[in-house]
Length: 135
Image (cartoon, rainbow, N blue to C red; front, side, top):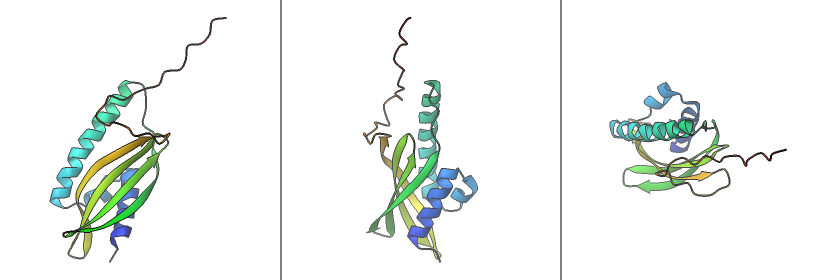
């Protein structure tokens, strides 16, 4: 049987690779509802960025931070990393029939590539290059 840390590592890898089949296996029904809400938020954010001329960078890695037990759940924070920055995702894992499953999840923070906090409710900011000097 996998540990919660091993399950979270596989989950983060599947998330980065957008392995939907792998992700579907790991959710409880409650966790699936939360994931669908989060996916809608992330798709809207990606659409905003694309409309502003900025394609999101692919995930390049992740970090796992085991926070400990709360009630029946093990709390694990995942930091998903890319050239754009990072997103911090809180996950709550519950062992069901010997298998760790995500019972709850939410994005709890994001940072840009320079480590500054990003307001995910604000419109996507796109930097524009400085004007080219006239000859």
